[in-house]
Image: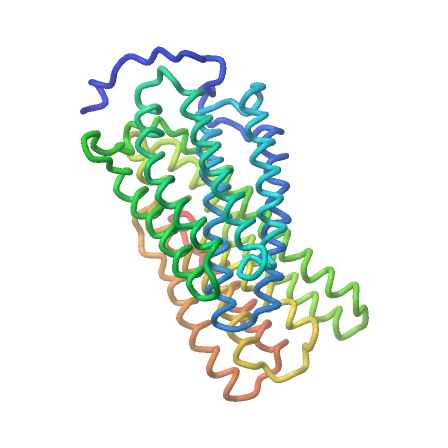
Length: 396
């Protein structure tokens, strides 16, 4: 079906639909909703700090993906529904409560709180979807999308609950399978036998609003990074630790600069003007690539915490991986973001990622202090900023 053949929209509850007036601003209700996820990111960072091994990394990645699904799908819903209308606001508050419980369960999600995490996750995802179906009734394209989403969410939810019931090892496999199902469903338009699939060009996305929402989440993650290092500094306030804190703070500022100096406003404009491509672009840029950048910030925060505790100690493999690998992961995500939106090859970011990864074994092998590793990470990121600044054309 072509866009011109889409049935006339006759919403049953038109007051719940969000108006379309250029780029829709983020409302106070949405900002209030986001506050819960400050706690979520802090919990994820502390989980990684407490489990600095490959299994801890994998588990943190799984938890981040599930938390991200809760946030980003809610952001999509408020792209279509007005957050300041009573029923929508009530739904958001309910999702906030569920997200708070979800975040509280993170430290023991692979131990005693696994079932709680799973049940709350399923209740939030399924409850929000059912509410959305009720709210958009009469809007053919949105009703079609949510109807086709529901079976996929149901299948993933079954795996999440089974994972919550399963023992050590099996839980990771089942939750990873649920995440894969979600990614495949979104990538293919949630095909349902006999009904077909939902097409991105019919989603009616206000891309500028989604871009601004994701920018807000990046700010939340960067704020969490500063909170983690600030808390560590408060426990040991001396000259050496203060110097390490300045390095960590400089790293957070550098990541902020890479993302927000020019890319953020330019990305909002590109997405807002993408026309029929908005849905497909938003799917990749926001659902897939932004959590990679958030993961980079979380890993960097874990490295900053280790830096503040022992700034003069020789960098261990874990310290080097966190301190240098975190910015590398962030820049890799941002490189892909640039490539998708502007169809360019982000050479400065690709080069920086390669340099940062090459520095990891070098720092470990040479016994470089943790502070020196952090300084190198900041220097490489600043190099990206300076390259962007002196580039005559193209968004940074």
